[in-house]
Amino acid sequence: MTITSVSPSTVAALPDHDVVDLALASEGVRRIEWAEREMPVLRAIQERFVKEQPLKGLRIGACLHVTTETANLMRTLQAGGAAVALCASNPLSTKDDVAAALVAEYGISTFARRGEDRGTYYAHLNAVADTRPQLTMDDGCDLVSLLHKDRADQVREVLAGTEETTTGVIRLKAMAADGALGFPVVAVNEAKTKHLFDNRYGTGQSTVDGILRATNILLAGRHAVVAGYGWVGRGIATRLRGMGSIVAVVEVDPIPAIEALMDGFAVMPVAEAALWGDLFITATGNINVFRREHFLTMRDGAILANSGHFDAEIELGALKELAKGRCREVRRDVQEYDLGDRRLMVLAEGRLVNLSAAEGHPAAVMDMSFANQALSAEYIALHHAELAPQVYPVPDDIDREVARLKLLALGIHIDAMTEEQVRYMSSWEAGT
Image (cartoon, rainbow, N blue to C red; front, side, top):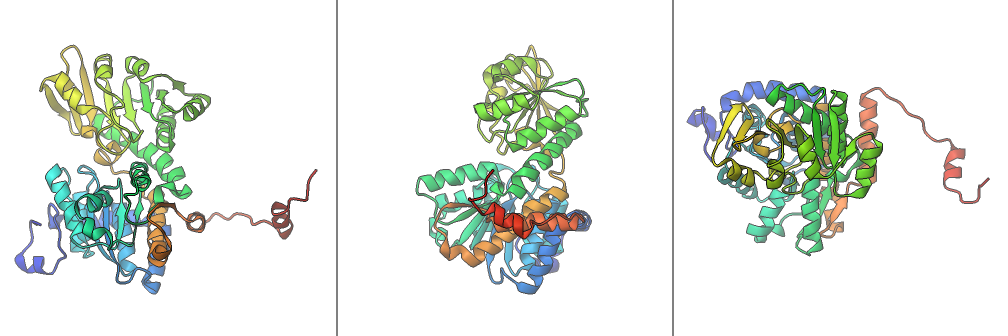
């Protein structure tokens, strides 16, 4: 891997890495420390890990968004005794100063450059795989997929893994159903203290933040279309409405569709929404949600953004064909496609708008998500031999411990049931 802006003597003392500029490290440290202030649960876990060393001697390979919050997770794993290597799970989500700080200040092998091309992205994945990880951490299943497709001989060395996202969990469950998954994986995304808070409040706020940073548009009075009404879609729709937007939801599942309706949102087919909307946001985890036939009916100046996972939710190939090469960057993170009779705007190249055009989730909500990651890593380090190659939920006691620690950090106290109440809840004899 190549590096820049350091002397040969300094290079020799650093872990293997590929970052833009190590001179950015001091700024990265300041921002990592700022995020740490908002992450008291992870900090408490880190303090315990230092004493107990539950991950001692283990090699962890992580493919995650390289942000300040992720940096604090990496520091926690390192504090627990693990040797950690990290690469980016998205080419546009990397914060270059954070990547530099991880290498220069914290001694963590990091392979990430904002804007890296596809070749570099996979070179970085392979660099992490070269460390022969025993535990994996994924945000989209790319590391697990690489190991199974291209490095099958290494799969048997992996004890277990964790997965952060809905998209990744979907891919892993498909692998398990096909009998292709070679080791157990804990679906961190399924933890209540992850998806009920991170997906809803974190993505809801940070998606709006990314859209506003990229465009500086007024949301009040604007027709906004949210594709998908899972926890991410719920959060986005709610916050857009809070900013004064008139919000419609498109769905393929009747249950979340009727929930969206009863939550007060308009519900309509995507073809109808294409004619109606000014701002379109995908949050489905699927492909080609907004596609060629929809682009042809969208109004001039319509804005498209993705807050799902991969950049496939908007059919960018078809949009490029329709524009016949007439595409230009009109603002940072805003590409204008000229279709002749109308112009459509795509934010952050169709990648995650909250991470590409802004800073991702607030640290306070990632505190719970990454606490689940750290405790799940500890759990699989201790129990991997008892687990089959399947996708597992986060153990309920971990989920509740994360919630307990978060409340404690916030100074919030709750009640416990009385002995009488415990007996009543476990009895079938008491009735009317």
